[in-house]
Image 1 (cartoon, rainbow, N blue to C red):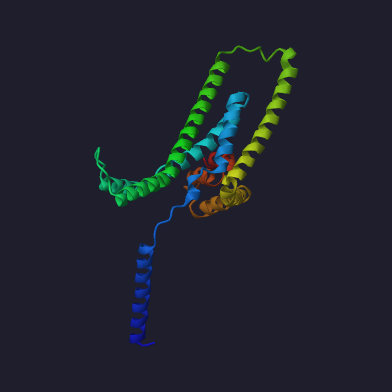
Image 2: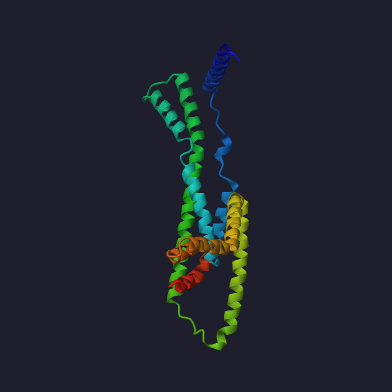
Amino acid sequence: MSTRHIWAAIVLALAVWIGGQASAQETPVTLDTATVTVEPNWDSVATRAETVLLRGVASKFALNRLRTELIVWREQFATEREQNAGRVATVDAQIKALGTVADGMDEQTVIADRRAALTEMRATLAAPAVLSQEAFARAAGLITEIDTAIRTRESKSLTQRTASPLNPTYWPGAIAAVGQYVGNFSNETFAGVQADAQSGTLWRNLPFAVVFGVVAFILLSRSRAWVRRIQANLHATNPETAHVWALPISFLLKPFTTLRSFKALNHSF
Protein backbone atom coordinates (compact mmCIF):
# COMPACT_ATOMS: atom_id res chain seq x y z
CA MET A 1 0.00 0.00 0.00
CA SER A 2 1.39 3.38 -1.06
CA THR A 3 1.69 6.47 1.11
CA ARG A 4 -1.08 8.17 -0.86
CA HIS A 5 -3.51 5.38 0.03
CA ILE A 6 -2.59 5.59 3.69
CA TRP A 7 -3.24 9.34 3.80
CA ALA A 8 -6.54 8.85 1.95
CA ALA A 9 -7.64 6.29 4.57
CA ILE A 10 -6.70 8.66 7.40
CA VAL A 11 -8.61 11.56 5.84
CA LEU A 12 -11.66 9.33 5.29
CA ALA A 13 -11.59 8.18 8.93
CA LEU A 14 -11.37 11.78 10.15
CA ALA A 15 -14.29 12.76 7.94
CA VAL A 16 -16.43 9.94 9.30
CA TRP A 17 -15.52 10.84 12.90
CA ILE A 18 -16.29 14.56 12.39
CA GLY A 19 -19.59 13.71 10.73
CA GLY A 20 -20.55 11.46 13.63
CA GLN A 21 -19.73 14.18 16.14
CA ALA A 22 -21.82 16.72 14.21
CA SER A 23 -24.79 14.39 13.97
CA ALA A 24 -24.53 13.62 17.67
CA GLN A 25 -24.62 17.32 18.48
CA GLU A 26 -27.57 17.95 16.18
CA THR A 27 -29.57 15.04 17.56
CA PRO A 28 -32.21 16.40 19.96
CA VAL A 29 -32.04 15.22 23.54
CA THR A 30 -34.85 12.87 24.49
CA LEU A 31 -35.95 12.27 28.06
CA ASP A 32 -35.97 8.72 29.32
CA THR A 33 -39.17 8.50 31.27
CA ALA A 34 -38.30 4.97 32.41
CA THR A 35 -35.78 6.40 34.89
CA VAL A 36 -38.52 8.33 36.68
CA THR A 37 -39.66 5.23 38.56
CA VAL A 38 -37.85 3.77 41.57
CA GLU A 39 -36.73 0.15 41.28
CA PRO A 40 -39.45 -2.30 42.40
CA ASN A 41 -36.86 -4.39 44.30
CA TRP A 42 -36.24 -1.43 46.60
CA ASP A 43 -39.91 -1.11 47.45
CA SER A 44 -40.08 -4.78 48.45
CA VAL A 45 -36.94 -4.45 50.59
CA ALA A 46 -38.24 -1.32 52.30
CA THR A 47 -41.64 -2.91 52.94
CA ARG A 48 -39.96 -5.99 54.42
CA ALA A 49 -37.84 -3.79 56.69
CA GLU A 50 -40.87 -1.85 57.87
CA THR A 51 -42.71 -5.11 58.61
CA VAL A 52 -39.75 -6.49 60.56
CA LEU A 53 -39.47 -3.32 62.63
CA LEU A 54 -43.21 -3.27 63.27
CA ARG A 55 -43.27 -6.84 64.55
CA GLY A 56 -40.15 -6.41 66.69
CA VAL A 57 -39.37 -10.14 66.90
CA ALA A 58 -36.39 -10.38 64.54
CA SER A 59 -33.04 -11.39 65.97
CA LYS A 60 -30.01 -9.14 66.10
CA PHE A 61 -28.43 -11.12 63.27
CA ALA A 62 -31.48 -10.55 61.05
CA LEU A 63 -31.53 -6.84 61.88
CA ASN A 64 -27.84 -6.42 61.06
CA ARG A 65 -28.33 -8.32 57.82
CA LEU A 66 -31.23 -6.11 56.88
CA ARG A 67 -29.25 -3.02 57.87
CA THR A 68 -26.40 -4.01 55.55
CA GLU A 69 -28.84 -4.44 52.68
CA LEU A 70 -30.38 -1.03 53.37
CA ILE A 71 -26.96 0.62 53.41
CA VAL A 72 -26.29 -0.67 49.89
CA TRP A 73 -29.57 0.85 48.68
CA ARG A 74 -28.89 4.12 50.51
CA GLU A 75 -25.52 4.51 48.82
CA GLN A 76 -27.11 3.85 45.45
CA PHE A 77 -29.78 6.50 46.00
CA ALA A 78 -27.16 8.95 47.27
CA THR A 79 -25.47 8.68 43.89
CA GLU A 80 -28.72 8.90 41.94
CA ARG A 81 -29.72 12.11 43.72
CA GLU A 82 -27.37 13.97 41.36
CA GLN A 83 -29.01 12.51 38.26
CA ASN A 84 -29.63 15.11 35.52
CA ALA A 85 -28.19 17.83 37.77
CA GLY A 86 -26.34 19.48 34.90
CA ARG A 87 -29.36 19.50 32.62
CA VAL A 88 -31.58 20.90 35.38
CA ALA A 89 -29.10 23.72 35.99
CA THR A 90 -29.07 24.52 32.27
CA VAL A 91 -32.87 24.62 32.07
CA ASP A 92 -32.98 26.84 35.16
CA ALA A 93 -30.60 29.26 33.44
CA GLN A 94 -32.82 29.23 30.34
CA ILE A 95 -35.94 29.97 32.39
CA LYS A 96 -34.13 32.76 34.22
CA ALA A 97 -32.99 34.23 30.88
CA LEU A 98 -36.62 34.57 29.78
CA GLY A 99 -37.21 36.94 32.67
CA THR A 100 -40.34 37.43 34.74
CA VAL A 101 -43.68 38.92 33.76
CA ALA A 102 -44.37 42.30 35.35
CA ASP A 103 -47.73 42.81 37.05
CA GLY A 104 -50.40 44.18 34.76
CA MET A 105 -48.42 43.49 31.58
CA ASP A 106 -49.04 40.89 28.90
CA GLU A 107 -46.34 38.56 27.69
CA GLN A 108 -45.80 37.50 24.14
CA THR A 109 -47.23 34.11 23.32
CA VAL A 110 -43.97 32.70 22.02
CA ILE A 111 -42.16 33.57 25.27
CA ALA A 112 -44.99 32.17 27.42
CA ASP A 113 -45.04 28.94 25.42
CA ARG A 114 -41.28 28.63 25.69
CA ARG A 115 -41.37 29.19 29.47
CA ALA A 116 -44.11 26.57 29.86
CA ALA A 117 -42.14 24.06 27.77
CA LEU A 118 -38.97 24.66 29.78
CA THR A 119 -40.87 24.36 33.07
CA GLU A 120 -42.34 21.05 31.99
CA MET A 121 -38.93 19.85 30.83
CA ARG A 122 -37.39 20.81 34.17
CA ALA A 123 -40.05 18.88 36.09
CA THR A 124 -39.40 15.80 33.96
CA LEU A 125 -35.63 16.08 34.38
CA ALA A 126 -35.83 16.64 38.14
CA ALA A 127 -38.27 13.78 38.78
CA PRO A 128 -35.64 10.97 39.02
CA ALA A 129 -33.53 12.98 41.47
CA VAL A 130 -36.59 13.84 43.58
CA LEU A 131 -37.64 10.18 43.75
CA SER A 132 -34.07 9.16 44.59
CA GLN A 133 -34.01 11.75 47.37
CA GLU A 134 -37.26 10.35 48.77
CA ALA A 135 -35.91 6.79 48.60
CA PHE A 136 -32.65 7.92 50.23
CA ALA A 137 -34.59 9.47 53.10
CA ARG A 138 -36.62 6.30 53.50
CA ALA A 139 -33.53 4.08 53.58
CA ALA A 140 -31.73 6.38 56.03
CA GLY A 141 -34.77 6.45 58.30
CA LEU A 142 -35.08 2.66 58.31
CA ILE A 143 -31.37 2.30 59.14
CA THR A 144 -31.82 4.69 62.06
CA GLU A 145 -34.82 2.71 63.31
CA ILE A 146 -32.84 -0.54 63.11
CA ASP A 147 -29.95 1.02 65.05
CA THR A 148 -32.38 2.19 67.71
CA ALA A 149 -33.97 -1.25 67.96
CA ILE A 150 -30.57 -2.93 68.31
CA ARG A 151 -29.40 -0.48 70.99
CA THR A 152 -32.65 -0.87 72.93
CA ARG A 153 -32.39 -4.65 72.81
CA GLU A 154 -28.74 -4.59 73.92
CA SER A 155 -29.48 -2.26 76.84
CA LYS A 156 -32.31 -4.52 77.99
CA SER A 157 -30.11 -7.61 77.81
CA LEU A 158 -27.41 -5.90 79.87
CA THR A 159 -29.78 -4.84 82.64
CA GLN A 160 -31.91 -7.99 82.72
CA ARG A 161 -31.11 -10.54 85.43
CA THR A 162 -31.39 -14.20 84.45
CA ALA A 163 -31.34 -17.45 86.39
CA SER A 164 -28.11 -19.28 87.11
CA PRO A 165 -27.09 -21.66 84.29
CA LEU A 166 -25.84 -24.16 86.89
CA ASN A 167 -29.40 -24.97 87.97
CA PRO A 168 -30.41 -28.22 86.18
CA THR A 169 -34.05 -27.11 86.21
CA TYR A 170 -33.35 -24.64 83.43
CA TRP A 171 -31.31 -26.99 81.22
CA PRO A 172 -34.23 -28.32 79.11
CA GLY A 173 -35.34 -24.78 78.35
CA ALA A 174 -31.76 -23.81 77.49
CA ILE A 175 -31.41 -26.77 75.13
CA ALA A 176 -34.69 -25.82 73.46
CA ALA A 177 -33.51 -22.23 73.16
CA VAL A 178 -30.26 -23.36 71.54
CA GLY A 179 -32.22 -25.49 69.07
CA GLN A 180 -34.50 -22.56 68.30
CA TYR A 181 -31.47 -20.32 67.79
CA VAL A 182 -29.91 -22.80 65.37
CA GLY A 183 -33.19 -23.00 63.47
CA ASN A 184 -33.56 -19.24 63.33
CA PHE A 185 -29.96 -18.89 62.22
CA SER A 186 -30.45 -21.31 59.33
CA ASN A 187 -33.72 -19.64 58.30
CA GLU A 188 -32.20 -16.18 58.43
CA THR A 189 -29.14 -17.33 56.48
CA PHE A 190 -31.37 -18.82 53.80
CA ALA A 191 -33.45 -15.64 53.72
CA GLY A 192 -30.31 -13.51 53.41
CA VAL A 193 -29.00 -15.62 50.54
CA GLN A 194 -32.38 -15.43 48.85
CA ALA A 195 -32.46 -11.65 49.26
CA ASP A 196 -28.95 -11.34 47.80
CA ALA A 197 -30.00 -13.50 44.88
CA GLN A 198 -33.04 -11.33 44.20
CA SER A 199 -31.05 -8.08 44.38
CA GLY A 200 -28.26 -9.49 42.21
CA THR A 201 -25.56 -9.14 44.87
CA LEU A 202 -25.07 -12.91 45.12
CA TRP A 203 -24.42 -13.35 41.41
CA ARG A 204 -22.07 -10.36 41.31
CA ASN A 205 -19.98 -11.73 44.19
CA LEU A 206 -20.16 -15.40 43.18
CA PRO A 207 -17.13 -15.34 40.80
CA PHE A 208 -14.95 -13.73 43.48
CA ALA A 209 -16.17 -16.25 46.07
CA VAL A 210 -15.30 -19.14 43.76
CA VAL A 211 -11.82 -17.76 43.07
CA PHE A 212 -11.14 -17.14 46.77
CA GLY A 213 -12.49 -20.59 47.63
CA VAL A 214 -10.15 -22.25 45.15
CA VAL A 215 -7.21 -20.25 46.47
CA ALA A 216 -8.12 -21.14 50.07
CA PHE A 217 -8.42 -24.83 49.17
CA ILE A 218 -5.01 -24.79 47.50
CA LEU A 219 -3.43 -23.06 50.50
CA LEU A 220 -5.04 -25.43 52.99
CA SER A 221 -4.07 -28.53 51.05
CA ARG A 222 -0.57 -27.60 49.86
CA SER A 223 0.83 -25.06 52.31
CA ARG A 224 2.24 -27.69 54.69
CA ALA A 225 4.27 -29.24 51.88
CA TRP A 226 5.42 -25.81 50.76
CA VAL A 227 6.52 -24.92 54.29
CA ARG A 228 8.47 -28.15 54.63
CA ARG A 229 10.13 -27.65 51.25
CA ILE A 230 11.11 -24.05 52.02
CA GLN A 231 12.40 -25.01 55.45
CA ALA A 232 14.44 -27.84 53.94
CA ASN A 233 15.95 -25.47 51.38
CA LEU A 234 16.78 -22.96 54.11
CA HIS A 235 18.47 -25.62 56.24
CA ALA A 236 20.41 -26.84 53.22
CA THR A 237 21.59 -23.43 52.04
CA ASN A 238 21.95 -21.49 55.28
CA PRO A 239 21.39 -23.57 58.42
CA GLU A 240 22.57 -20.77 60.72
CA THR A 241 19.58 -18.53 59.98
CA ALA A 242 17.02 -21.17 59.03
CA HIS A 243 15.35 -21.08 62.44
CA VAL A 244 14.86 -17.29 62.10
CA TRP A 245 12.81 -17.63 58.91
CA ALA A 246 10.83 -20.71 59.97
CA LEU A 247 8.23 -18.84 62.01
CA PRO A 248 7.53 -15.95 59.53
CA ILE A 249 7.18 -18.43 56.66
CA SER A 250 4.66 -20.46 58.60
CA PHE A 251 2.63 -17.33 59.36
CA LEU A 252 2.75 -16.32 55.70
CA LEU A 253 1.63 -19.61 54.19
CA LYS A 254 -0.44 -21.43 56.77
CA PRO A 255 -1.33 -20.58 60.36
CA PHE A 256 -1.86 -24.27 61.18
CA THR A 257 1.88 -24.92 60.87
CA THR A 258 2.76 -22.37 63.54
CA LEU A 259 3.04 -25.00 66.27
CA ARG A 260 5.32 -27.10 64.11
CA SER A 261 7.52 -24.06 63.50
CA PHE A 262 7.79 -23.45 67.24
CA LYS A 263 9.01 -27.02 67.66
CA ALA A 264 11.58 -26.52 64.87
CA LEU A 265 12.71 -23.33 66.56
CA ASN A 266 13.21 -25.09 69.88
CA HIS A 267 15.16 -27.94 68.26
CA SER A 268 17.46 -25.49 66.48
CA PHE A 269 18.56 -24.07 69.81
